[in-house]
Amino acid sequence: MKQVFFLVDCNNFYAACEQIFNPGLRNKPVIVLSNNDGCVVARSNQVKELGIKLGTPVFKLEHLIKRFNIELLSSNYALYADMSRRVMKTLSALADEIEVYSIDEAFIGLKTDPDKVLAYAGKLKKIVERNTGISVSIGIGQTKTLAKIANKIAKKQARWQGIFDLSQTSNMELDKILRTIKIADIWGIGPKSTDWLCSKGIKTAKDLKHFKDQGLLKKKLKINGFFTWRELWRESCIKLQQGLVGKKQIVASRSFGKKVNTLKELEQALASYATTAAQKMRGQKSAAGMLIVFLGTNRFKVKEPQYFNSMVKFLQQPTAYTPKIIKTAFETLRYLYRPGYNYKKIGIVLGNFQPLGLAQTDLFGQFKKAAGRNRLMQVVDRINQQWGSSTLRYAACGIEKAWQMKQLRKSPRYTTSWEELPVVKA
Image 1 (cartoon, helix red, strand yellow):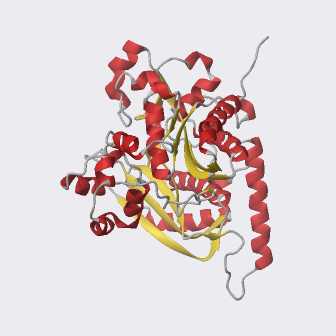
Image 2 (cartoon, one colour):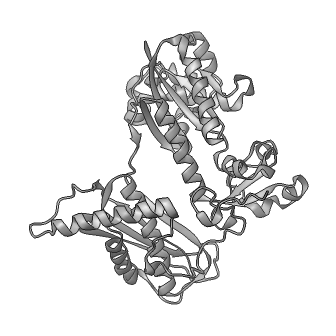
Image 3 (cartoon, helix red, strand yellow):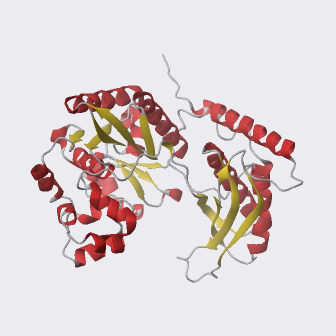
């Protein structure tokens, strides 16, 4: 029995979610757009083949959109989050150890006989695709770093049919493969480290692996970069973090779909984002001890007056109670707000997390009230998860929400909204 790691990555995840529920989009070029339908954030394979890059402003693509009949869609985050939950639930049922790394990626740890690794990967891929409709690529290695590299190869080279195994290659074969991996494409090596390594003539993963001065590596790349170097030698240093890794901070923010200059509209937007952030925080069983409110104008409108500001607010007692978070955020906003500006964006950051239910109160803290608030939030979250995200909402969030970001091409929330379920006509 030997330890191996799988990196399971959903292919073209946002675009794939759209194509599952709209058969008319399958095998067609599809672009998913960013907030306010501004830039490319996801592409189908057909769009990738046209050379369109992530982050490209959509107005620069008008000639290609018309020529190749590219379908444009607004981001549908509710749909993507629910489809991610389904993928990860399927993986969790098939693996003893899993780390949900991002919305479309998960690491799996497995101890098995070498001759069973590929069979297990094939089974995993087949079941995920059958249960969710989402195609996945699987990279296999004796370390998480090598699993990441293997996954990149599985995605880019069709001959491997979505699965590539580095765990059974010889050292010579591994070096041949690492020679094809650019230093900037290695998981855990950031831009600054890349620049320094390239200045030393280290341009590929093989170059990094065979760099001899370990002390210099540890000094320049810090401990995480040093672990990456060791993992290229098949020495597992970066362990799985079981389940969904709790974030150290949660940010909720969107650009407005129109100019906003009144305090009332800013409060409505801030209350909506605070509600979203608080729900995500409770999902990782945390309570916030600090929040930051930030707002600003459109920096690209250079002829208009500019204003950017933020403020940190520390809470006497960590809380996951949404009304308390909204109230504190409003107090902070009223200090930051300046009339006479056209605001483009506002947001909230929650941090200084403590485990939910274990946060220390003061000497005169009302334990029963805190426990009741936690139960109330559990009920609200359960109802919104079952019946739709806005089934129960706070009046402070507003009704009309004219400030919301533009989503003129948004698909229905097929899996999370009763009102938007597909209709079958016989």
